[in-house]
Image 1: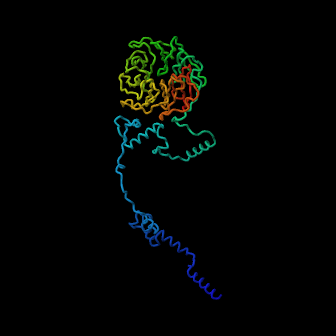
Image 2 (image 1 turned 180 degrees about the vertical axis):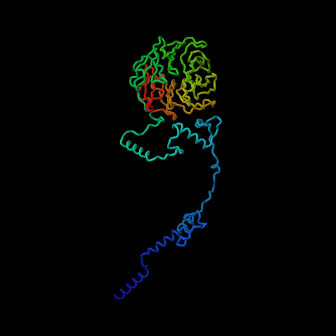
Image 3 (image 1 turned 135 degrees about the vertical axis):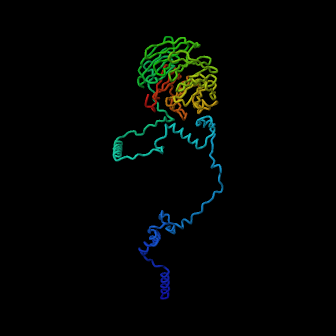
Length: 504
């Protein structure tokens, strides 16, 4: 037993010799060690604090290599050296050029000479187009906007406004200025001619250019004016034209006159609303036509364009109703439309060609074939002059840009709208060029509202399953797009309220 105890005590003593003693570190030694790591010791610190040393001028503790700790030096030495690329593509440094003659990129050309553009230029054109569609650069994207300093009074006023805002409840999300695509906020109102219904076809519906008034006319041999309020639409006046079914009626540019043409008459009527007189216009010297039906009024109020037979277009003075001159297209002229400033006339023919005329010289500026068109049926120019829409007998509506029509011999449409299956007979742009209404009078509910610039149809108009629009004859938007009207075959002038637009 004594031997066993001796061996046990000996092994315990051996383990005690191997285990180091645990001593608490000296606080002063720890602090001195940290000072050396941070400042390099007392001697190095005194050297840094001595003024007049040229080597220390303009340097900081971070610039002095001697102040780096051992850990930092060790980390720096552990960084691998930069590797050289095994192969470099030389084409990466070359500015790539894009072919601008492609039909999807022709809209970005500012002239026909721009065959190619660099990627940077194309991106700039895309940016400009986006800003134009959105109504300019938003405030949050403008880098050059400088924030002004507000004094204490302004800050107090702002805090008071915030407190007032927090005391209220409601919808504080403002409506976007741009018309969204997809669904159209539209409401059906009582018919525009509700206070004077008609039992015959309504061929014309048009809003007054300045007043909140709408014009209707048709086969009931009358021209009527109604005040538009969306509720009862009271009648202002109705004029009966004896044995004169109205084919088409239009306001003059100043809204003081109404011009009306018949079905089989060489004469037409002018109703002077200021004088309260109806003046028939009979034989016009120099005009050789056996009937006058289709016509257009120039936006500047100077001319009246009559579409005659055998491809002739006749210009009359709007003031005197005298003959000015004629133009002629190949085939038969179907429809015409003035440019917004009244300086040009766009005409399409039954041969599928589109002619552009200069009004002053009455010369053809250019002409082109409407892509895929066998027979033209109608034409319209947007209120800002940017787009030209051409309808055809197949129901397809091709939309071109103005620059493409003027500068290209074979322009390509920016969009071919294929939402109609019967011949397109009516086209109408709204005043902001955000909507294009297309219609055919060959089928019920054959009306579509197209969003611009996406050129997609609004899916909720017309309402599916409800035959309300019976053979649409003509369409028109109010001066600020707040209302939309359709003349139908059943004597109705349908009226809709477009909620996106606040004004008439």
